[in-house]
Length: 466
Image (cartoon, rainbow, N blue to C red; front, side, top):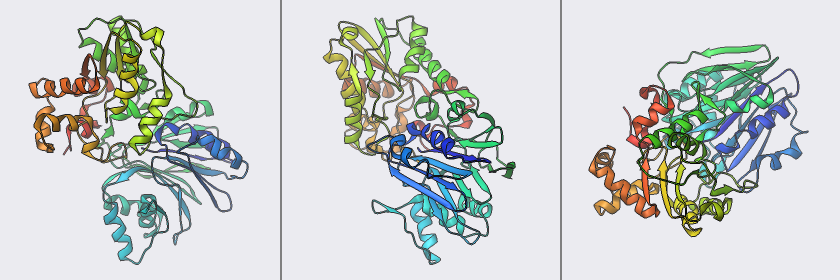
């Protein structure tokens, strides 16, 4: 997942753009970019895999002058991309994933088009989108053409001479919110980016909605629709705690998840803890409901370390997780510990960098409580997981059956009340080295989020939804 921020102002917007984009650093770990428009488009892109956003862009801040701009923290592609079209140049930034990118590439090439933005031997998906938009007479008709052609997910910001276009994914899987401060308008993936910049939220875009932010105000270009499948994982892990989506607070949802886990538990413990930072709010909810004290046996050394979930390679993820978590032996020794986390994706980090550190420092028991159900299917709409073999649940099922498991066979293990599900969970707990393991159910997770089930994307837990 990537993070988007855009701003339109009557004065130089570079500082607002800089800080607004930086507030999305938890959503990507590979590339970051800013683009501003004054008399012409000016762009800067940096690799942030080994350094923070601020350190890469702070020296360029005085050079990025313009009254409109867009920024992006990217999980993969270098962005924004500048496209030249018959109706003028524009800069484009994406939060999403194109399932049918290769098909779209062939469509562009069939008309004689070519691509210049190639990263690691791969054509940049953002440029593909830009070329499709540029093939029409204006940005709005180009966007309609793109959305009618694509499969996957795409929320976009487009910086053009007339303003900043904000485009939410057609099924709303990723959010976009509009805010205002005096004569300035801003748009962001995370509404938590507005508060310290003095902006007040005025609108959350509907799925498929397209608006244009200009110095004269907000213009509706395409009316949104009520059909929605917003990513449930935003509340469980991906989103920033101070953000809200569909008027549901991320922090409060996570606390309710922890409360649900405690309500359905029957163990005795000396303390409750959260894996920093992803499990903290879940653990606070568990502690409040259970009455067990909340303490910190694992603390995070924050300086220089990002999220261990977002880097693209397992080796980097393991290294980040190992180095950033430090055990507090005096809190751990001889205690029965409930450790809460958002999810078990691949499992190696929780085992090696969390659970093992508790055992190594003298824990008496380690009970693992997870705020979402077992992840059974890779995400088709962002880059969080790409293959089934990455997923811990699939690996455990292969052990149970003795071979690679099909999606149809995996369906037998989705029912949290079945003996098959219990066998999968017990074996997962054994592999992790936990005294016990429990997941929150889909039903409780949906209740914690507070939206109708039909408005949530639950595919990574339940498979493709029709």
